[in-house]
Length: 148
Image (cartoon, rainbow, N blue to C red; front, side, top):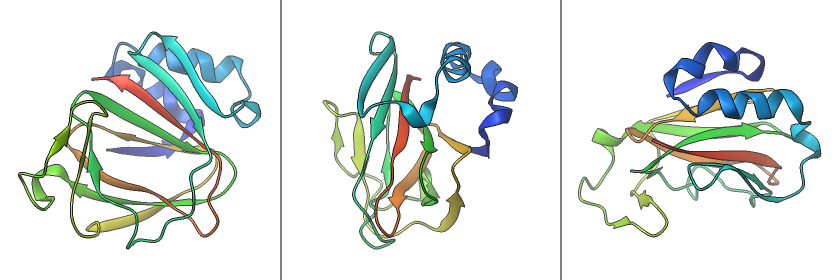
């Protein structure tokens, strides 16, 4: 997992061959002005999802992992609390995987929580259990899907 300010994203582009393409998109677009929906930057391998998720609490934000994709999450309009638990510590270890949606949901709440403010980002790799979207009223955000 990575958490940092978006202005520092360039320091992480060596982590994946598609990260530079996403960084170029960030530099040439006003992320806050993007309309809700899906933007394919490289087919299904690199997709920007602009979302307005509903409000969640720590208790309703489910821990999840993805086998095929890395998540880059960027809150745009409000602070967002996110939970983290290494996938190896998520319960149960044999939770069912939904291959169509590339997601496994786990029971319980995260081990740790942190706040991500507008202007920051997180990167969740397949080994990172995460519970995103914890906000009082919901907020506009971007979730980038990068084929791992």
